[in-house]
Image (cartoon, rainbow, N blue to C red; front, side, top):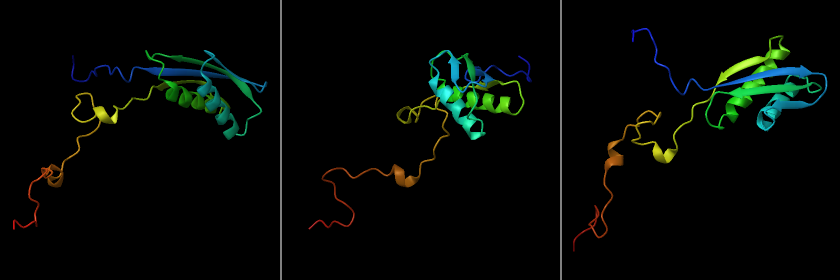
Length: 140
């Protein structure tokens, strides 16, 4: 591999494509029909741009293997609606958002995307053992 060739990033290859076709009939539909979050986001985008009297159809496709692409679909739907209302073609391709590791699996995990957190010396002090003498206690 040459120095100027990038290796493919599997997380960046997942994309969501949304095409919005506006209509004068004030009904929003989608294909596939179960993408209600994207339809609601498109409705909010239409209302936000003062065009709540319009409707349309969303065609949604995703290259992600799992169904967890709803945030990317919502964002792509909003951008597709804005694209059409500004005179564009209404088709948007958006990368799926990356998922962060759960907080319980973060420290020490080789796949953790979080930067390492420096530990202070105060955090490394050991807790006193039960029954041990505490500082300031006198042995009388």
